[in-house]
Image (cartoon, rainbow, N blue to C red; front, side, top):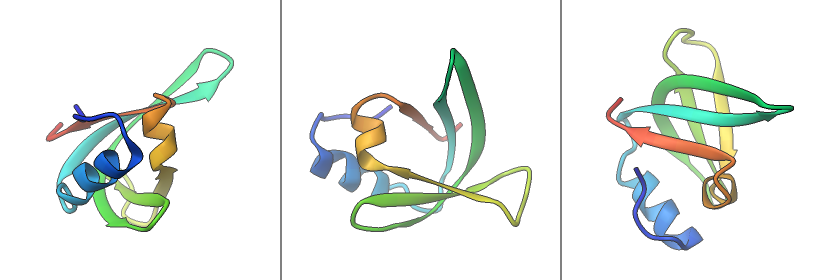
Length: 78
């Protein structure tokens, strides 16, 4: 789970886990929760990229504000 509550601390925490496996729970709207697992591939100033475990070609991107607002939950080492 992430520690801290600012965007800078969330970004730094995610950058420290590049290349590690994560489990993502994303709010898909209308009471739908999407659960994915993958590897944090790269970080950018406002988003980060996760390569999905079950598909080598597919990546998903999320913003740090998604994590801050708890639209996306990240569990490291899952």
